Image (cartoon, rainbow, N blue to C red; front, side):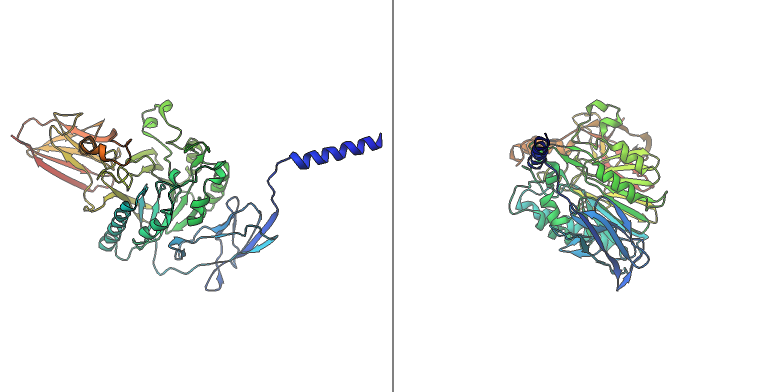
Length: 490
């Protein structure tokens, strides 16, 4: 009986060793200092991507982690320059593939000579380069940023964020990640990066393996940093389902737990900027057509992000949709969905909603922020387009304005021969320029599925006289007034 029991126990032990599949992890302690000029910096958050600890008064930290950690990284504190390595922010260090039980990692920061209370943020979305001939247009956009900053923001520090889809085709070799880093560096400001669905590795077995190439260029896919009175958070809201190119918008529990810890370091009432690729909200949600939302186009567990952001004045920056849109989600919560820098995948001068190729500019002063959309190659006051009677297929009898950065706080008024006719009427339809362009040129597009799409930031008015002068006056959220006028034909 005793021998039989021993044989049974041996058999069970053998079966578990042969058939039990478990991740092999070992405890690892990561420790070190965050220094500036040899002196420790206190209260700097240090993370392994799961937990966050603060440095002590001598800049020391220690994290009891595991061998599964990929990076040890910090939340860059205000008052110090952004360290750069290979033209990319270097707030992280990759840990050894097979770490010992204790690993020493230090961070060195340089004090900043500029005050970030006032600073500028430039946001690009979806540059999405597929071909060599598109790179000069990216460089032109970088030149445009550089000229804008030199002309309008002398002496004011500036930073950038790319809201994902940096490249178009992850399988194309050599990768466009490196030339994109070089082209964006021509702005001469530090740019931070968000991972997009086009930046994921395909043909992998799970979501966890889809970021290998991206990480080799940019490091962690979620992190935070501080500039002036603003706390910035970059999140990875793409969950790859490992079937073809399919994914959903989703924040993993690990990120949510990390974000809870991250935001505990931020004073309630502060301004928090969250950058993602996939938007949290949608036009369908705004119309309360919840069942029409695509899981690939929104962050499906957004309500939990909103809950974490309740104590703050929060702005969410996103892209992905290839149109410009704004959502006022609450008194303290605003989402900016950015039009693509790549317009209609570099095949037209406008995106599918008629927004010209460009980027957003945010002006921070303490916790306050103003913003506008900057079209590449155009003056910063170019904020809408005006079309004559007959141009719009949806409103042939009307003059039509496309106000691409509109939100409900804006006013769109019109005047006929100097007479105030009141506000124009908002409607959904096709922008005349991009619709006509696609109608004439779609047969030459490299991507045959492209075309114009309906937008909700159009406005119309029907003139009373055929040969009248029409003037449209648009007032934005902070009181800036933009004007365009045209003479109607007789």
